[in-house]
Length: 380
Image (cartoon, rainbow, N blue to C red):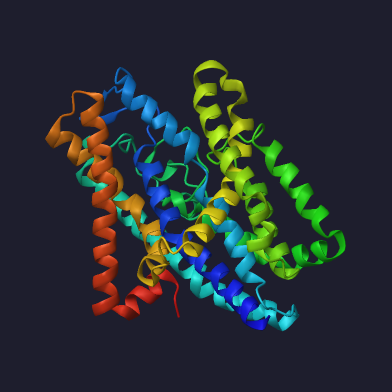
């Protein structure tokens, strides 16, 4: 019996590791295909892609099945791992905070600083290539500080229509995760007294928050961070076996994830006002689907978790936004796409080249500058 428990624990761990890299790939895909109905800004002119009907439909399918799916799972994994095999105490909390300084805060500051420096260089030397060229330079303390919290563009005299994350946009996840970690004593106390009902209430708040949030994080916001982190934490604190708990809903998750993804695509065209509801449900069932699929693939021995790919996922997450947009623009300039197929080819090529470049950089740094890589990725 003990061997079976050990095997199940190992499978659970492998399933989580197997998910890390694909989730990072999904985020790259989303950000490469993120221009909804708009094109590339070059020399002050926007090249419109709205007439490329097939390409727009592909983007719609990507939105329906992949958009907003990865980050909730990352929050869930973070919550589960944070409380895994931990007897909660004040000393343990302080130790966890010290660890998160290295694993979250330092990489957060470094990668946002890199983004800020690259933005300065881009605004000075490559302004004609940018969607939002600098109109003025306002290096006040508040404007610089905003680059590390909610970047509004005021540093460069730019008005951003949606401001929700730091200057390295994807790092809003790390920012929100650090806030949640600071609140873990309160979350632990509430979960001990409210049991699963506390998580249910957070889930309801997250679900309806999407109707009121007008920032850059339409479906998540802080409610999403607290809900998915607490969901994972609850399962860890109460020693819930995810293979059993999630496995009960394997077929349901496959069915609902697929139906909701297709429903979102249809709703975009026929009933856009219900898209938020469909997407929130899709995100919820997407978490169950992703974990069940990973466990099933491992159980059937169709694949196995790669330590290299799993360990590269955070590096890809924090760095991809620095290059994928630039690669996309360069490919567009040199290939001059004139059809949906050529546009699709350019976007797929951007995803592949971004991943190839970052995986190569990760491999070379791990081999030749491991100390630097540990600092950049928060590994001690």
